[in-house]
Amino acid sequence: MEIAKNTDLPDLLEHLGYSLKRLGRYYTTREMDSIRIKDRRNWKRYSNGTGGDAITFLQTFEGKDFRAAVEYLLDFNGRARDSPRPRRPVVEEEKPEFALPPANEDNRRVFAYLRKRGIAPQVIRSFLNAGLLYEDAKYHNCVFVGRDNTGQPRFASKRGTYDKDGISFKRDVLGSDKSVAFPIPCDPAVPWVLVFEAPIDLMSFCTLHREARSNAVALCGLYEGGLNTYLRDNPHLRHVVLCLDADDPGRIATEKLRAEYESRGLKVSTRTPAKGKDWNEYLQQRGPPRERGR
Image (cartoon, rainbow, N blue to C red; front, top):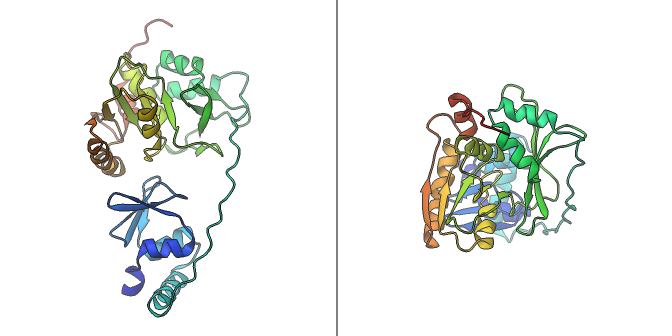
């Protein structure tokens, strides 16, 4: 068991055909950019909170039961000592072409869903009018559209308009460019950018702070690619304000990103909701500001 548990994860993942990259003290993979490997022995995937050792990795991602996973790791470590390990060739998969889902003839379900989540009508209309949000025709999901600096859609995240026990459907549209994520326009007179995990958190902040109409990006997870692109496209920005969730993954990501962007010479500060796990939870507990005008 000790041999299996202490398997070197970067070596194992390379053997399995994953493409590894180094992120400071951690490793991640091109295939799953939300995974982090620490001390070469433990992994955690921040997109869903799963984690563990080499045994749980094989159970989670390779479909092996416990016994098969342990036997595989014992065999793997034996080969590692005795002879070179054959590696599975890395096959570059063709990325599917990105296309936005067909739009519904109206946005009534999306509007009603976001109102239920506490988002102000004024804020919802502004996102709809800007082409950053719409309702898809087939499933009536919220579709959050990420546009690049030329205004072209490059990313889209679908969010179901029906929550069961606080859980709803969430998925990026195939072919989405995660390095664009979900930005809103940048005002060149403003030197900072607000960074959120989810578009609904960004919209919640805009509801709580009506002056916030620009200079923000939702990462749609914890991968910082969207922030890197925003900073590249707007080089005047010198201040990053991290507004990530107030849970363990959010706090860990906040410290990681703080160190990373401070090392680039940027000022980094944080804003967290006074209550709740995230900005939308806080908005619902606090209650939205009263709507003034259309």
